[in-house]
Amino acid sequence: MTISALGRATPVPVLVLGDVLLVTLQGELHDATAEQLRHDIAAHVVGGTAGGVVIDISGLDIVDSYLGRVLAEIAATSRLLAARTVVAGMRPAVAITLIELGLTLPGLVTALDVDLAMGLLKSATSAEGT
Image (cartoon, rainbow, N blue to C red; front, side, top):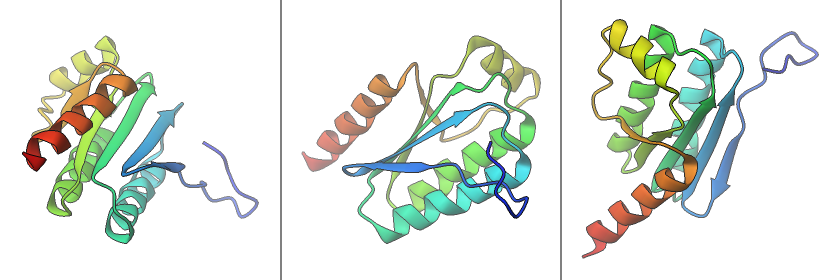
């Protein structure tokens, strides 16, 4: 996370790749940054033609209950705005921690890496078109 000159956390970059938003999370993600990310993704989905969101969490060593809920809320918000969300790169230790915390993350689709996540979004879009 980068701190601005004002002492505030700078937002996580949201990259636009065609009709997909790509967000890569790395290091420690503070609650305020996670909340800002949720609002940024919703604003991007509403403001553009994003049909999908890929959140790469391979750079995170831990995901606490708050971040787990934020990821589930991002997926639910995106789904309401007609976009799909895929979380990519979940480490085994993160998955075990989420289960131990009792977080099932309903509606959250996962993929082993970003390439597979992009493929899932592409195949879902193709299936909707037929």
